[in-house]
Length: 302
Image (cartoon, rainbow, N blue to C red; front, side):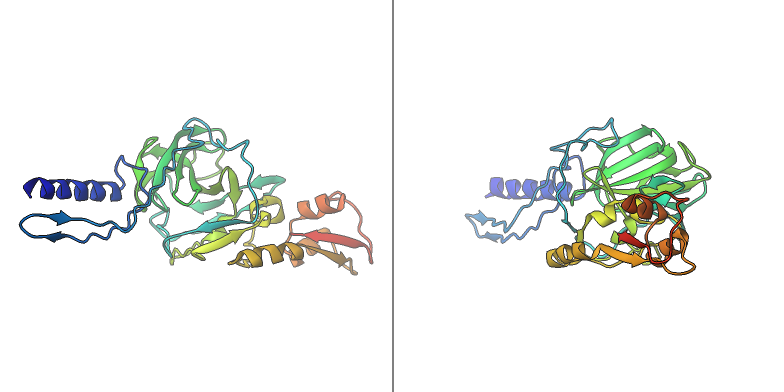
């Protein structure tokens, strides 16, 4: 009897240790239901389910920004979240100074959140540190891999607070914000990646005081992984895709024909249709300084 009780206590201690995000980082969650029946002779334990996820099993490289370069991603893809909120990556009101999208002729693959050098930066979700080192352009960078397949990137830091392979809990301190790398002024450059492909963070999350995840299950199409169809100066219109059927149907709506009207310019057409000038030019094989004429038909692709 004593030996069985000792075994039980050891087992429960191991489970509790894993749930706290210790070095046993293969554990995502454990739904434990134990029925303990004991008299003078026996102890019986029954477990409903134990779910384990080893997020370090594949493509785990602590030396490169993107270890998924040869990975094929099939769209639309489904993302799931266990919670309805995330932990804010900074400890004060979030002000987005530059959005995901086309910016000065280049792809801006994340959002910039204002902070002062030395402000603390925190993990949005539980996960494991895959990378904590200097990355070209991003400067001092921490990348967390999470249990739903996403990776969050925290760039332009001035100081590290974690190291590679550390198990992290949501809201845990990661480092100090700063201006390292190609940063013009202090800010947090936050990127959301899935297998190396960036996703517009504002499609998944609301960056206000509510820290809301837009949906526990959400479908992502290529539209939300292409910076050139978004504008870094304004938030794109958010139409959530909550089912696979919605995601497939949305693919039929991403191209339309626009007929140029009197007074139209590429800039005005871009603003009216929530599509970047770069995308207009690329889709229609024209240049920024091309002359557009009344009645001319342009393909709008989002």
